[in-house]
Image (cartoon, rainbow, N blue to C red; front, side, top):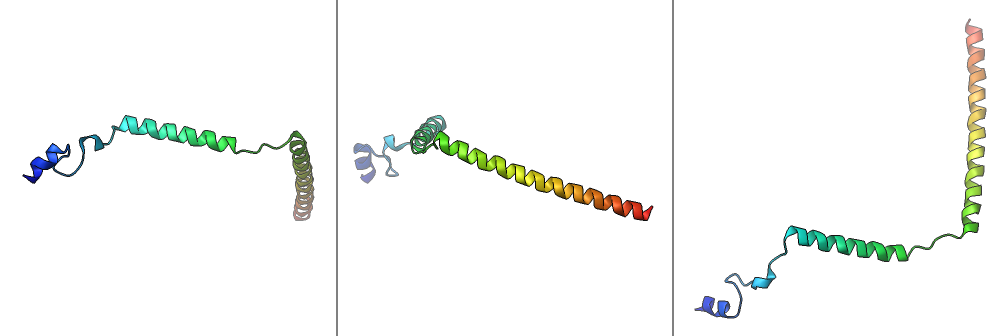
Length: 92
């Protein structure tokens, strides 16, 4: 009798309503993708882009750093090349 009462109320015997079914995998994937894209759009709006002046200033710092490191490596290369040349001449 209790089961008849539940069915009369629109519920299954296990206590779930028929409209409580999970949507199929394609629908869930679509909903997840839509939520992801919506969140991406919201995050992109929060980005604070640097001014051109800041970009050129940082670019100058990077170029100077590259030049200094390049000269340092060039100096080490010359030092080790000459050192190896001296060792090879002494051994020969």
